[in-house]
Image 1 (cartoon, rainbow over the protein chains, first blue to last red):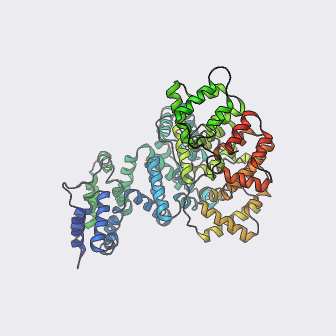
Image 2 (cartoon, rainbow over the protein chains, first blue to last red):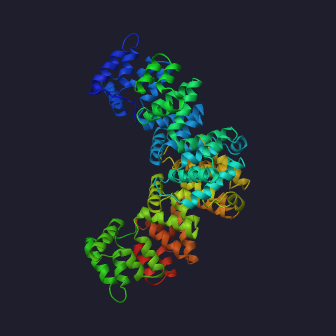
Image 3 (cartoon, rainbow over the protein chains, first blue to last red):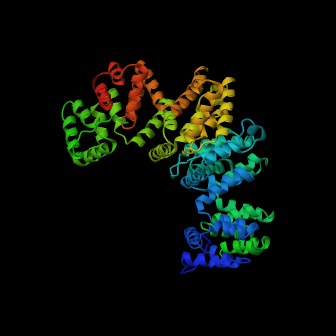
Length: 317
Length: 317
């Protein structure tokens, strides 16, 4: 359920481009007017506005906005204006090449369906002229990876995967792999080829079946079993991957909550922007239920100015 | 360049189905008539014949042929009648689940373009309700793999790859990775993560550039450097992967030549059938040049009966 609201009837792309031009031209910028338009148009409409703006004013809208806006608001508008698949490709690139925030890559790899992930990888290749897998793999730098227990081998398996997307499952296999997972978790051997193989290659339906067997056989959900383990980077990555597969909405609730607590605007922006056109409604509902406070309220409390107004508009306020 | 020849004008699918029915009905089978039709129709035409046969005689053509024919001829006809992408998926399945002939998987992974490989993986999933990667990965069985230096990690990387397919290359990277390869080959550390990473993730254009640097810097083509190394299964797999990337036609010439020498009909059938509609012409030319004998002659010398007649028909004789 998207939270994005589009007015009915919606102005034509040329009308919107004119209004945006009026908001940015001359001295100062009318940020409120920009939010009123951009935060209430879907990806196709935003693309058409960009084209209309280019045609009418012979100027690239993204560049103009970059020069007009600043801070978190500018970053948020910049990310928002991408086409959704391309946006995920750009976020993966930034995560691998600049911030090295491996959670972004885990989310993209584990929350998307196999064909959505493939589309992101294709967009990545079209934009950067090499593959996402190469960028993940070339971080591994030989034996350093193992020494530091960095989660790169796991990351690589997750991004490389082109999983089977059907519902067919193999119950016997689920049982035997639940046992494999349980033994390795008990021995605290999280960074083990077999865990990486199971999470990196099995279909989501098969992984759910395995996790169900895990809970039935060993009395604890695998998420809880993992939560008891050490908190090195590998364990954190593994927990994130499991959480993204088991219940992505709950995962985003927890990540948003933590990011708001520590004023990590990049993460707040990323999650709201990536989901406003998809499933931010479900995330909002779950946030309210889990945290006993509306997400809009939590966001409003921790942000300010145009950035705050923009996020709240995307949240459907 | 295909070697398949289709008569002009070609009979209608219903006419072909009638002729096939006449060839198989009653006591005995007219194999010559079958070859005359099936070895001279392309994949689309064969599919239409199958549909027409089913409609006219309420019988599955593949099953009927299986019951009529036998030996290498039957196997060859069975493989030939698949749609090309599905055929590669079936061959990969047989290779992983039955014969464990990892060369088949290496060929499929390294000779196809990234999108062709993806299509094979999609056909595999549609047919077997799980992924090719799972079948390769589940052979790894934990630490056994490393102990036996089996090439499964390499195989897995090659099948998982969704390489960048463009021409852009990074010359500095090619130089540095040529050095990495040279050092590992010199130390005889073939089964090393870095070799697997380079061959498994880089685009083919980038790999060519790296191999060119290798030859220029170290005075030997990488194929030759690898040929001097030990002949364990990992080294064989690595050589096959490199050969499939460097010069697939030459690779197939060598494999065909060796298979004919030792009467390995499965391999002879596989290569002729997989390439008759694509590039068997180039393979024939190179065979003649390298082995000083026409491929048709070499095949005729080592095969017999209807099997021989069928292969020669596919070879364009």
